[in-house]
Length: 200
Image (tube, rainbow, N blue to C red):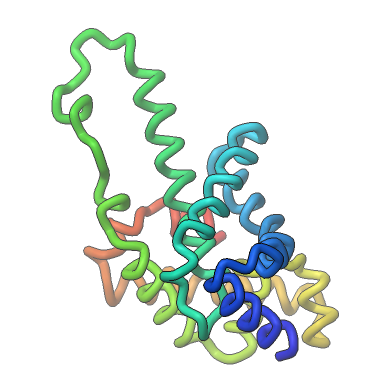
């Protein structure tokens, strides 16, 4: 609870242009955000650049960040979107030699995932996570949003590492099933990669 209260204080200060508060948020989240990016793009150099882009975006959107909840979810979604954009760009570059490259693909500026507002993606993800049993919700937040290791989570919650692994596996499945069952069309816009790569 103390950590959460400290983070909310930093978010409020950060919204008022406090660079020290921003630096503390960076220190709190940069490792987990980098891990999420690297998991998708598989390129250390690109992942570092994307990490910088994510936090530049956080600073640029400081007046829009909700001040009553953790920024972990926002960073999670934005890092996913930026990583996916990077992957799309690389795929297009690798296909540039194809003479008969389809016009609709060549001229496409954005995808459904890019068009979907971050706020909507966050809302759906938060809704799914909020429906989890309390312990599984805690494990999900600590592992996915805060980037804590399973061992650290086990120590903090007084659980065995095996129990944390099982809780996280169950939570991932429940979130994925909830989104597929309740919002099948929206899941297509969020992106299958989010569900197949992040929720494993």
